Image (tube, rainbow, N blue to C red; front, top):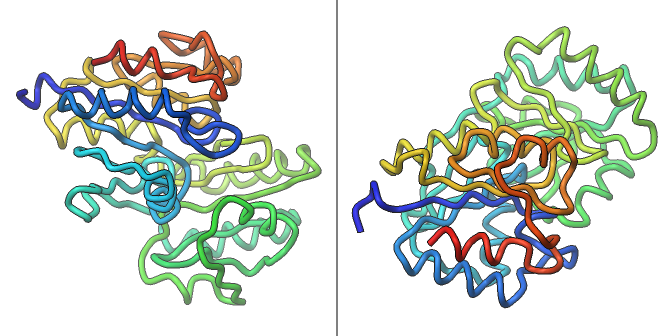
Amino acid sequence: MKRSDRKIFFFDLDGTLLTTKKDISPRTMDALKKFTDAGNYFCINTGRAIDSAKAVYRGLGLDFKGSFLCGCNGTEIYSVDEDKYVYKTGVPLELVPVIMDMAKKYDIHCHTYNDTHIVTSMNDECMDYYRRVIKTPLLVTDDVVKELTSPPPKMIAIELHDKVKQENFRKALDEVVGDRLTLLYSSPYYLEIFPKEAGKGSAVKRLADILGVPIENTYAAGDEENDISMLEAAGVGVAMLNGKDAVKKVSDVVTTYDNDHDGLADIILGAI
């Protein structure tokens, strides 16, 4: 099969490819195997960092030839087969203390990442909540920038109880960095902060270009607001039945079943 004949399927994880138990059902797994055995590409396109995406990939026993991981909302693209990054960008280092200081002013939890750890000055209830699923090691420090050797792939602001307070922080931060960074919600609690040139949609276009796959041969599935750019960029955008209304509005297809009932299985098989 020529590269131009191959297809790429981009998947969000939580609420999309994964069930609420954080696994992949046997029927959906079988559909993925048939899709990749046909010579097509599999890609996890997630807000999680690459190390967390790797942990999910390995933990689920995935072993598909032609697998890629797009992490931190498109700021990192990693080839599983080649064990290397094919693209990386990040939040400019000079903006990291600006964002952290504003988070403290608004009493909002905020953290970022280096190559090995979550890095923060705020080890609190929000961090405990975040690390229920994200098992990346934690580094707590008074000087976050000192622990960063390169621009971090993203930052994240978390508020579990007061949405108004979080939205006030988002609006204030947007006035300061909105010309350089994207601020959007990946869940009711998580505000993602990453470079304008990134985003899940940019990852779709970028990886398709790297692999020489026409954009019309790309598929993407998601359920949350940070998936919208991915669904809009792909040749076929798939919204989960359990997804947000805004996600369904921009999609080409809405699954008949939710993520706990093999909502994607028939879509994957139909894409072969």
